[in-house]
Amino acid sequence: MSSTRRNVFRAGVVAGGAMLLGQAGAGAARAAVNPSVSGEDAATTGLRRALDDAAGGIENAAGRDERGRIIVRVGSGTTITLRDTLVIGGGTHLDARGARILAAFPTVAQTYTADTANAHSDAPVYGSTFSSVRTAAGVSHATMVLNHVPSATTGGYRAPGNIMIRGGSWDPIWSAIQGASGDDQAKASAAPPMNVITMQHTSDVQIDGVSIYNVKWWHAIELNAVHTATVSNCQFLGWVEDPTVGLWHGEAVQLDAAVPATTWAGAADDTACANIRLVDNQCGPSGSKPGWGRFTGSHTSVAGSVHTDVAIEFNSVTGTKFDAIGPQDTRRLSVRGNTLSGCAGGIYLKAYANSLSRVDIVDNVVATTDPARPALAVHDPGGRLSITDVAVSANTVSGPGGCWYTGASARPNHTLQGR
Image (cartoon, rainbow, N blue to C red):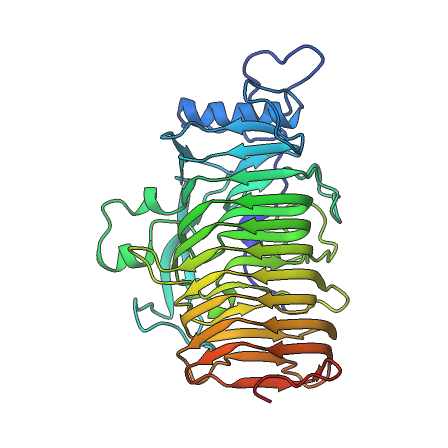
C-alpha cells in the first residue's frame, strides 16, 4: 500500500454536539450533526442550524428540490465565515449561489519537514524544516465541509447520501493571509493545510457550479469511498504548493480510498470510489496563486481496492505543475474531450497495486511543457501488472512529452496512439 499525509490532523468522527436552537416542527427533530462553535456570526450559526434541520427532515421555506432533497439556501451576497467544519447531512441541497464562504479555523504552530525526494517549484523557498500552522485541537476536521458520517463503524457507502452542493465562492486561506506579504503571503503561512469539500462513505453526490480559490496543500474536493458523484461546472483556481510531499499529491479533485491513513470519518475499510463523473470544470491559476499540481487523480493504493466507472470529460485545465490528469488504480475509465494547456504533463493512467481493464483516452487536446513527464501514458511502472482493453486515439498532442506504455494491451483492432 502507498498512502500519505494527513490523518494526524484529522482523526475522529464529528460528534453530535451542535446547540439546538429554537423548536423543531411537529413530528420532526433537529439532528445534531454540526459541531457547536463559539465565535461565529449569526449568518454562520443560522446555516448550521438549517443544515441540522435538514438532516432531521425539517423543511424550511425553500422546500425540496426535484430529487427530494431539503434545500438550505445561503442568501446571495452573504458571507459565511467558518471556524470549524460545516457538516451536511443526507437528503440536503446546500444552495450557496452568490454567497462567499471563508475559513477562519483556529490554528496552532507546527514545524514541518520539507520533501527532498521530488521536484518542487523554485519559489517560494523552504528550509529543510520550517514553521507554519495546523488546525488547533478541538477543530472537527481540516476541511471546510464534510458530509455526516454517523459513527466510526460506518463503512462502504452507508453514510446518508443524496447530497447536493451548488454554487458559492469558497476560499480557505483568505481570512488568514490578510495583511501578509512576501513569502508569508506566497506560502499562506498563517493558514492551515486543508480541504474545502470532503465526501466520505456516501453516495449520490452532486457538486455543481462551485468556485474554489487558493487551497493550501490539499484538495478542493475529495471524494473518498463515494459511490455515484458528479462534479460539474466548477472552478478550481489557485493552489499553494505543498513542500512536504511530491506534486503528484496536489489534485484539485482527488479520488481516494478509505484506508487507515486517509479516512476522515467512519471505517477504514479500503472502500474505493465508483461511478464518478467530472465534467465541464475549469482548473488553473487564480489571480494571486499558480496552478494546481494536478486537476484530478488518485495517489492511495491497496491491492483489491480499485476505483471503477470514472469519466473525466470536457474539462479545461491550465498550468498544472505535474500531470494534469492522473488516475491511479482506476478500472473502466474514460478520459475524453479535455483541453490541457501549458501543463507539465498530460494524461497518465497508472496501475500501481491492481491490474486494470477498459481504458479510453480519446479526443483530448494536450499541450505539455516538461520533457520528463508524458503527454499520454498508460503505464505500470513496476512492470508486474497488466492494463487490458486500452484505447488511446484521436488526441491532439504538442510539447516535449512523449507516450509511455508499459503493461498496456490495446483493444482488439486498435493501435495505441504514439506507440
